[in-house]
Image (cartoon, rainbow, N blue to C red):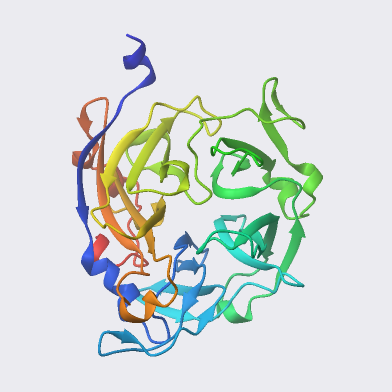
Length: 352
């Protein structure tokens, strides 16, 4: 009886999308990246934002060099991707920004930023540390992303692992710092106060509800890059993530509200790759084409930087089409998506 009242999220099928992945293979001036955040813009385009990005050509199965940007962007429109260079501002000093999740609220684009700095004492491949979080606002996200004007504010909490708009609130998720596990928490800000970029306007979900204070842990195996979003035909919210941030499994949890309570994890997929780093699984709700469908990507990486020269196929996102059922009903058979008018030209043909 309890399970029926809470609802049950079930996996129907999962299918790789190699045709969609080729958008990341065939781009001019782009030979690999991680991150792979995306958001629908007010003008109907989709903006993609990546972390560390290789710009070298691939010739004869090798990258010609290891030239790298700290971030890059792409515009998806009419089924095509157009890649641009760095779009995030400099962080100052030795710090740099890696992208977190993004949202559009009242026509403005908000991008959560992870502030990163070098850590020479870290293990190979992890010689960096997170030094905080910032929030970037683009008041007019039209035209070329390279020409966008932005405002940036330092946040008092490490937010941006995921975010979602629900009602009059923007909810943002973060990992509780100073823990060896990856406990997830959530904060929110009213949309009427968001554009002011005042860090004091955020409140967290704690033991006593929404207030300023210590956060309540939502679940223990969160990830610094994930998604919380709606899936057409599924009530509430679905979190898609790599447990604790690193590993081959892609998991999902469900909640009726952004703050939970969250269900037990449901395994969606286990990546078949071996000998490489798997991380950053997340859903892209603007790519969904049917009820019950989630388009998911995950990132792949190598510990040895020089190995990226001879294995140019690795450092590129992989894409999956996931079909979900709710309470045993295959929601993809429900014509909800067509009735709701959610079709749009911004999606790629591979996701239609």
